[in-house]
Length: 100
Image 1 (cartoon, rainbow, N blue to C red):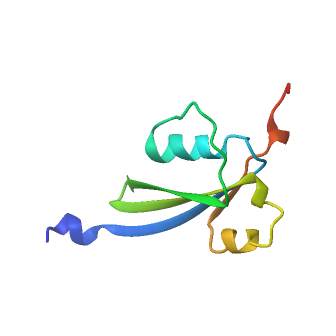
Image 2: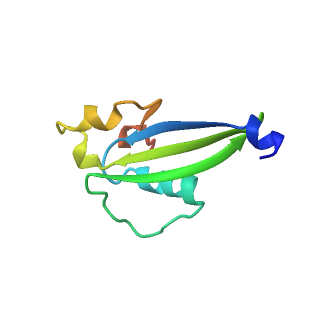
Image 3: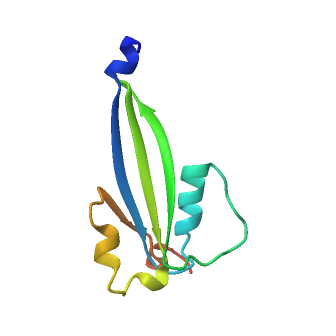
């Protein structure tokens, strides 16, 4: 094992996207994690997961879990369980759009 491999650090972070249905959460997650963008709408049922691995300065390897919570799930009993342990929770809702 080389010195640089021994000096590397691994971190895992969890980010949860919540918001209204059809507000673009899945598009945002797909663009970020897979560097792709789907033009067709497909409703997220329950939740979906994405992973993004990045290396930060200082040889810090980060695996970012992106949890995409379906809009119909927001008022459900499972929301607190989905966001448990998250370092980031982002509320992406229709109310943020201007001019609609």
